[in-house]
Image (cartoon, rainbow, N blue to C red; front, side, top):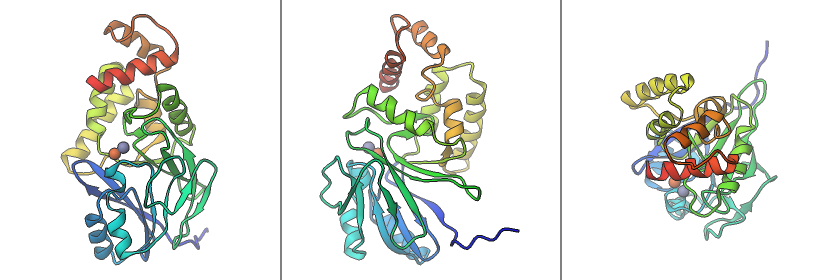
Length: 268
Ligand code: ZN
Ligand code: FE
């Protein structure tokens, strides 16, 4: 028999704005929050669950991810981790690729990954999986369930490399992205890959969750690899579909396919 001595960690989705999830990681006593765009729902959740905030983790500089930090700091003067390559005034501990974080207050180690594309300095946080539990990935607006973030600052080549890093994680890695965009992403994915059976099945499952007001997040890397066109752009059927629908003039490099796919999604 095996007994875990570590306090069990849980991840709570805190809905905010129209479709954001702020992620609260806690052990029943202490909590860390990822991308608190708004302080109010976080303060309410801390009160409800009787938790003390011990750390703030930011993935990128957009207001819907950092807007609540100042107010949280007034209640809890905690360290604020954030990307080295972005200037965010409230960040006290800038971190980048290769950095290991021992999250204050929690038995939690997070590795930092550089994932530029949506913004130039965007980072993700990864708790490595082990025999006892799958890994956790907090990827902000880089990889979404069924999609990926818009390229506001980076290039398609950067996004390909960032998504490739995430796609290489173990299949059971839980993907905690920052927005509930899943159904609209899957509508697009279906236009791209109408014959993908795993995708058709996923549409049913996720639609059912939304009809019952449940989050579709976390997803898993395995499910994304099977259904997300932005991880599947190397599939010949995708380039052929882009050609058929006039989004691509001729079959070219995977980079050209990815670029055309992202442009199509922007106007979809
Ligand atoms: Zn963003
Ligand atoms: Fe966002």
